[in-house]
Amino acid sequence: MSDRAIDHPGWPVSAVPAAYLRPGSASFTDFLAAAEPQLLPWHGRSESDRAGLSSLHGAVPHGTTIVALTFGGGVVVAGDRRATMGNLIAQRDIEKVFLADSHSAVGIAGTAGLAVEMVRLFQLELEHYEKIEGVRLSLDGKANRLSAMIRGNLGAALQGLAVVPLFAGVEIPGDGVTAPGAPGVGRVFSYDITGGKYEEHDFYAVGSGSLFARSALKKRYDRAADADTAVRAAVEALYDAADDDTATGGPDLTRRIYPVVVVIGADGAVRLADDAVGEVAQAVVAGRMVNPGG
Amino acid sequence: MPIYASPEQFIRDRSEYARKGISRGRSVVVTTYRGGVLFVAENHSPTLHKVSEIYDRIGFAAVGRYNEFENLRTAGIRLADVRGFSYDRRDVTGRWLANAYAQTLGSIFSEHQKPYEVEVCVAEVGRPGAGPAAVPDASVVDPGGVDQLYRISYDGSIIDESRFVVMGGTTEPVISALNASFSPGWDLAGALGAAVAALGTVGDQAPRTLLPAQLEVAVLERGRPGRTFRRIGSSEMAALLQPAGETAAPAAGSSTEPTGSGAAPEPVDAEHAGADLPREPGAD
Image (cartoon, helix red, strand yellow):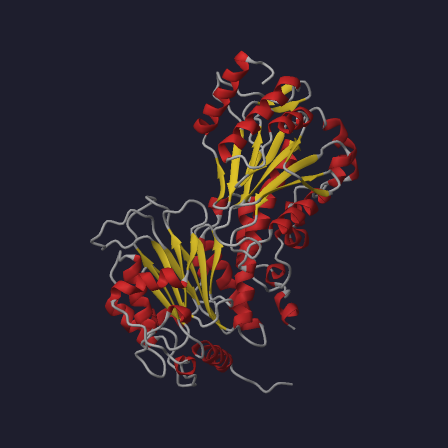
C-alpha cells in the first residue's frame, strides 16, 4: 500500500524520491546502482564506447607508483606525484594517496580519472555505512568493499583503463578486534583488476615502478621500526622507483613537490605536511649525492 | 463505499491521530550554543538513536514512531550523500534537506492511509566566521555563521528557529523552562544543563533529575573541519553536568515514562501558533 502511494504520480517533485525511502542496504554503491546508476563511475558505457576505450590508453593520465609498509605502530602509505600520458608527463603534482576514513588510506595506480572518482566513491561508501549503521566497518569489510568496486570497473580495465589500488589501515581501537589503547597493527591489501583481494605481509607496492620500489623495501624493511624510519624507507623506495622507471616522479626539489605520505596508527590516519615530507626527501637526496645506489 | 467525511474532518482526524502518537514518547531538545548546535534527547536505549548525523554540518533529531523516522533519517543521509557526490560537499544545505522532508511528510499526510507519527528537526551549524552572530541581539560576540534549526511536523509544516526546538512527549513545560533559561550564546555546559533540567520538568515524578544513561547527547561543533557531528558519551556528559550542581538521584525507569493520553497538549507553544497551518515550504 505504502509503495503504491509513494509512487503516485502526484508525489511532489522536490520530495524525497521513493527509492530513497525504501529500506535497503547500508552500502552507498549498492544504493546508487539501484537508485541513481548514472552517477557510478563505471556507468553508461555503450559497446562503441568500450571499443574506443582501448585507444584511450596512451591519451589519458595514468598514475604510477604507490608503496605501503607496516611498522611497529601501524602502517605507512606513500605515492609519487607524477601522472603520465604516453611518453608525456601529464601532471607533476597529482595526488594518488587519499585518506579513506579515520583509520585507513588508499593509494591508486592506473587511469587517474577513473581512479580518483573511485576513491571518492570509496570514501563515501565508508562514511555512508558509518552514518546509516552507527558503527564503522571492520578493516576487512572496508577491503572487501573496495574489491567489489574494482570488479565493477572490470569492463574498462579489460580495455586498458585499469585501476589498481593499494589499501592499508589499522583496526579502529575499541571496535571489537583491538583493545582501546593497544598499538595499531598495520595491514596492507593489494588487488588485481578483477577485484581479487590479497593481504600482503609487511610491505607492498603497485604501479609501473613497483618492481623497483618493492626490491628497495625488501632491503630496508624493519617490522619493529618507528614511524619516522618507515616514512624514510617509503621515500627511499619511491626514489629507487623513480631512478629506474620513467613514469615515476622523484622528489622535485626545485618545485618543492614531494611524495604524499600518510601515516596510520592507533590514533588515526594523518597525512604528513609537505614540509615534513620535504625534509625527509631532502635527506634522501642528500644521501644519494654520496651514494647514488642508496 | 466509505461514508462521506468532510475534508476538515478528514484532516482533523489525521492530525489528532499523529499528535497522539507523537505526544506518547519522550521529548527531544535541540538548541544553539556558542560553539554550534546541541541535541539532547531523553532516550533510555543506547543503540536506538533519536539523534543522528546527516552530513558535514547537518544533524537530525526525531520523535515519534521509530521505524518511520528511521526511514526518513536513512533517506536524508542518502539524499545528502548523493547530492554531495554529484555536486560538492558544500552544496548540501539544511534548508534543502528540510524542504525535501516537508514535501515528503506533507504528501504522506494527505495521501497515505496513515500519516507518519513523527516530528523531525534538521539542524545546520553555520561555518566559522561565515556571517553575523547566530543571535543578533547577543551581547557576547559569536564568531560563527548562522545556525539554523528547522522543525518539520507530521503534516509537512515547517518552521525555522534560531534558539531552540522542543519536540515529542509533553512539550509545554519543557518549552516554558527553556524560555526562562535560554540565553543567547551560552556555553555547552550551560546549554546542556538547562536542556536536561527542562527535560526533567515532565514525567510522573517531576521535577526529575535525568542521569547520563537516560540521555542521548550530541553536538554539531562549528570549529571542526569536515564532519562536525560528535556524540557526547556518559563520562563527558557527567563532567559537563557536574558544575551545575546536579545531584545524581536514581530514577526508576517506569516512573520516567510520561503518561500518554489524548488530553496531551499540542506539541506547539504559543509563539509557534502558526505551526499547524500548513505552510508552503518552497516559499522559504
